[in-house]
Length: 233
Image 1 (cartoon, rainbow, N blue to C red):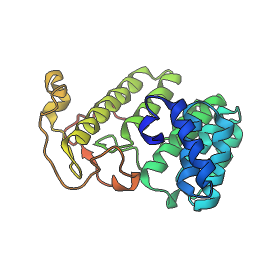
Image 2 (spheres, one colour):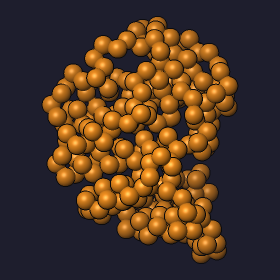
Image 3 (cartoon, one colour):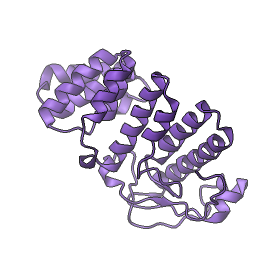
Image 4 (cartoon, rainbow, N blue to C red):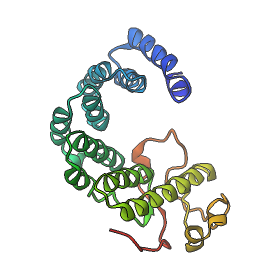
């Protein structure tokens, strides 16, 4: 119920998660759910406590980005960076690495360090020619930092890439499980085609197809190989 309600009624979702904690507080996914719903309602201190409990029970660092963001939420960007740097990124799945980079970049912005915020986003997952499940958020974060630096043209290009990646993955999720969207050149250049969910779609059994699949399932991109590289950094 927490998962079903979190996007529409996060307060009620949190109430369900808390009920689960009272009944099964030693189960990792229960504490993870409590942390996510606490974060969703802006209770960052509680989110931190639940996230640390989840990490202690599970032995996993896959929610490190949420820990970093929660530290930011309680006004501790320095501590947020320390938390993020303490994790071995090579042990994280690609989606978690991308989310961590975004969170660390935000912490750098909180500290008034936009140049370092941009460097936080220079990770292998920042692939401008392919759309993965994390690409839209990563591209948008880069656009925001570039805008902060006054590099408007580059910011606009990355914002455009973020919109394309988001649309590609929205279509991929609608096509079916384990299918990939291949985006041809026409999709990128023609505004009418870019709005057509049927335009130039070709299914390949490689990528995630449902919003509830775990990040590890999305190891293949929805390719944007036809995209022009003008303005690419």
